[in-house]
Length: 396
Image 1 (cartoon, rainbow, N blue to C red):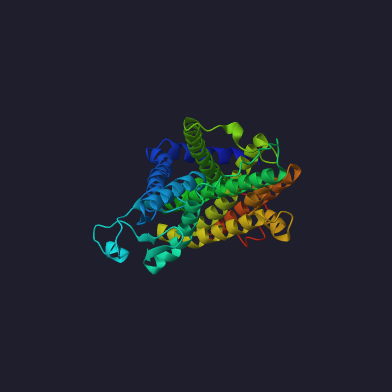
Image 2 (image 1 turned 90 degrees about the horizontal axis):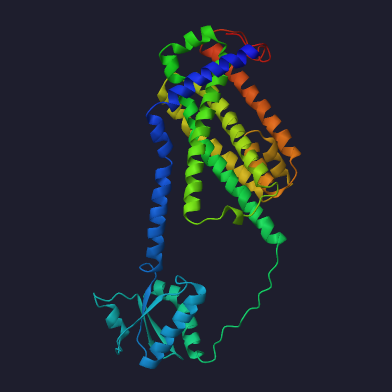
């Protein structure tokens, strides 16, 4: 066993150095940051657009005093409800027929309010009228009650803790951790599919198999890809933390998960490691059977869809703590990391996580063992029936 781990570390160091010291690794680190930067840029642009241009503009063609009252009512309501809650109002000239103004090519309003505050008439297309009729009724009512409309003051009574709010925050923390672990796993584990194709094509795998046990090759490659992924996560996490602090964020203001932040972060790292190695060992075994990159690309789509189904199953279980579905998600190895990290956010007990990690590690060992035996039988053309060799000591 000691020789197996020593050989696995040699393979891991070889693959890790080859990947991390290459120039393409820099692009690998910067790649996920570009969508985030673009998302922030377009998010800010979209927010500005939604606050101005995308809000429908309605012309107000009432008597001057009534127009001013409606504009004041719109200003008071948007201070409380938000700028996006009500349509934009702008003065419109008094005309006998508002339909003529809507037909003007230079008009920028989608509808026109005419008549009076007590009996407003809204002119526009049917779909615009359906969308704006309730808002115009609210504005006219507030304008009529301008002198008597007063916002009722609300007395504040603060508490240090709200169990309902705390439970909701812990649920959100569990969901966020699930999404982050799933995103990182699906982003990083897919590279293992093609890990052995090039070495099989160049006949390097025969040289490695003659020098070290095949189990050590699989284990070493899995360790190398995991270490490379952890380097990437450290870089992305440090960058995200720097941006968060630069934007004025306060880590102390974040709600604490049920097990506390130190244990929760340690469990998140452990469950990512388990999710990655579970999926990675499966990918390594499947990819080892492929002869070309085209076969690997063909396998990628159904495997990705399977990952999505597993994540949806674990995500559904978050809202049903203690239910048969949640227990099944915790037991099933491939969904267990996602279900258990959500449980860590909502339940303070730590011992179930130790059992879950041991359970997941046992399945990692089993999957690697089966993958090695299938690889030896179908690719290296050696060995007998694989299920008879499942628990025999590994050889080269």
